[in-house]
Amino acid sequence: MNRATPRLRALVALPFVLALAVHLLLFARWRDELPAELATHFSVGGEADGWTGRTAYIVVSTALFLGLAAGWTAFVRRRYLWAAWATAGFAGGLLVQLLRANRVDEFEVQVFSPGMDLGVALAVAAVAGGAGWALGSLVPEEPPAAGRGPAAAGPRLPLGSGETARWSKDTGSRTLTVLAALALAAAPVTLLVVSWPDALLGLLGLVIGVPGLALARVRVTVDRHGLTVRSALASRPRVRVPLDGVEGASVREIDAVTDFGGWGYRVRAHRTGVVLRSGEALVVRRDGGREFAVTVPDARTAAALLNTLAERHGKV
Amino acid sequence: MLFRVDPASSVPLGDQIAACVRGALADGSAEPGERLPAARELADSLGVNVHTVLRGYQRLREEGLIELRRGRGAVIVPGVAAPDRARLVSRLREAAAEARELGLTEAEFLELARTSLG
Image (cartoon, rainbow over all chains, first blue to last red; front, side, top):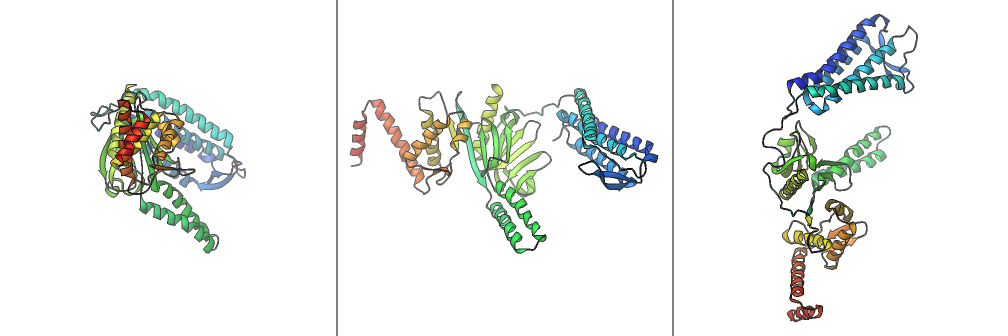
């Protein structure tokens, strides 16, 4: 659950409202100097190569601010308040620079200097981020929810004081393996059989097959670094929950469809998961109340060791 | 598979690692044909030297419980007999330790083993 207070949400929305207001104000003020078609896209060299009508521009830019504000307000946490401000500062700075670049006489080319104008936007973002960071002190610390912390109930694996331990298990999904292999095989076949440029669609097979195969078999490890889930074939990509971030681990029966809406690397509002099948899963409660789940056999041993290591880590 | 090592124990760390694999094989938490973690990875997890892990793996190979292949790493020998073999090796090691405590020499112990074979 996101426990952001109304005050935090207001402080997050504020910079976007400010940026939107400044942007609209400047647009109104410079209205007579702006061309009917605003340059909105520039080549690497900085010359305009894409244009948008005034009305469309103002609708899209306003929607951008509102969309960013909505996204940040919904998901923000106290310690990321500065990032919301920096985002608003960057977006605002960029669009104002864009307006400024469009204030040119007729027949003159609109020019956007990547170095200069992006630099200004970044500077605005830095200042806004600093302001947001300072404002963070206005928001009270998020109170820890009851019953959490490493001391919470959960299985334990007794270890001697100097004893170290590691648990790992490979787990996978045959279905995913087969599907990913098929997608991979389709790529060269399409490239050979189908005429160009349609054959480029075959590259989709690679786009689906490579990450699919990487995820179809994963290694789950619990050791002094925390919980690590990575492809069994390569050391990346991987997901790691360090011991610092572990509030407690438990075992739960997971249904891939009803709990996570499918298989693979799943992201839900307050939980993420590597879900390769339905059944026994190791569920880690992370600091901040989010959950990370991975379906793996023998999850009880993993949870017990993770609880023990996290508890010991907290003591040291 | 669960590995645990205790530097405070009198048992050498490599032997502790080997005992973990034997135990896991015997109780079913590791299966014949399963790949063991790469030595470097396991050493990093447990905070021990790579050579310590390799010493443990080498011992398991001598006991016929794993295969070490260049490029493929350490794999538990396939076949249904592997868990039983792991249990047998564990009991033999216990017997050897007991004999040492009783003060038997190596020759005496081997003689005893030969006699038991009938």
